[in-house]
Length: 123
Image 1 (cartoon, rainbow, N blue to C red):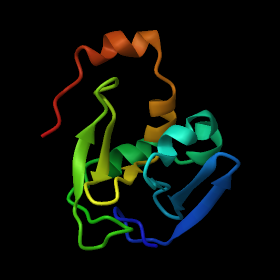
Image 2 (image 1 turned 60 degrees about the horizontal axis):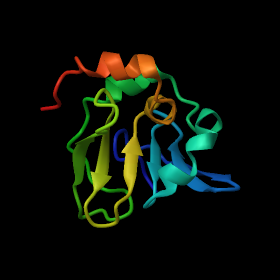
Image 3 (image 1 turned 180 degrees about the vertical axis):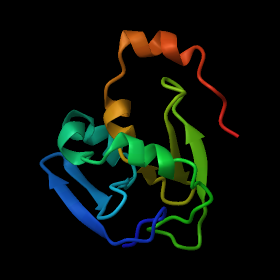
């Protein structure tokens, strides 16, 4: 499997609760349907990428699904944390998070609630 953002090979990251695929270059993460929910508690060990690098790749968003290559990924915003932008496949329901986004997604704090009231909209 190749990374939909930078084209580098993805490596499988296996945990007791499931698995994800992590890019060997940009460190973005691909989760099959609902795997992101099963692996939330392991976010620190799965999402090992630099959030600043992830922020640079966050603007690359017209991409194809790594599991269903003919299907484009849809740009999404987490409704509980609107500062988190990810991509999702409408066919297989997989999700792609840029480096650092999954750690952020797994840690929803009270302070973030107030910060998110002023989050910019995604175009």
